[in-house]
Length: 254
Image (cartoon, rainbow, N blue to C red; front, side, top):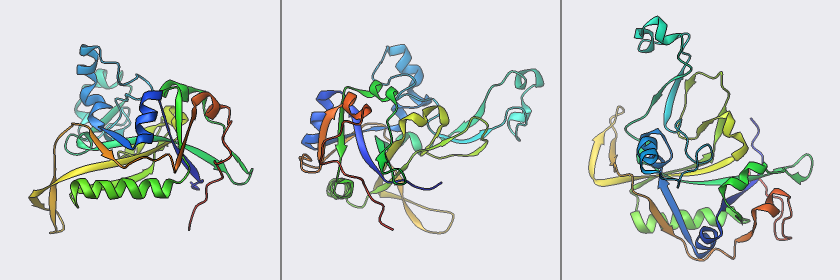
């Protein structure tokens, strides 16, 4: 699909929006969002992950299988059980849950129509305040600079749009994939995997690789005040596209 230019927006409660503009970028582990922690969150009455908004049991799915067709594993299930299965998938246990992520909304600019796309009203579920990053390249430079300062070259970093797959899709997936019912979030995601410089493995290509640190604790990247590259507005203004003059159409550099 054609990539459209967009500006990253963090939608959250006012206190956390202020923290972000102060320079604190708080990254939770993917473990906290997915099925790995869903049972303990439920038992503890933990509402920090909003069901259907942030928490998603499909996080970490690496392959989705049609239960009517099956595969070498699911075909071993009794026919009467497979007949009532609504979904079948494999969840990664070795990598994704130990990655830290930072999620933002992509305020998309429709170049052909010369206007921003109207955000979905459901976004208000994330919080009452929106921080629009109007210089995303500088924001990313500061993130990467501080990650290097804190962890050296012991990180595996990736940023991408989240890709939304339809209900009838079966096949491979990664940590930047979510089912299409979440498409209203139009998410941009940064993913950070921390590596152990003192522990290495030899991969299938004979290359020496640092091992992943298997820790689900959150990390905070302190990048300094970002009020020079961002602006804070009420979420209601974002949803109505009441944007301050400093917000200009983004561009894609080819």
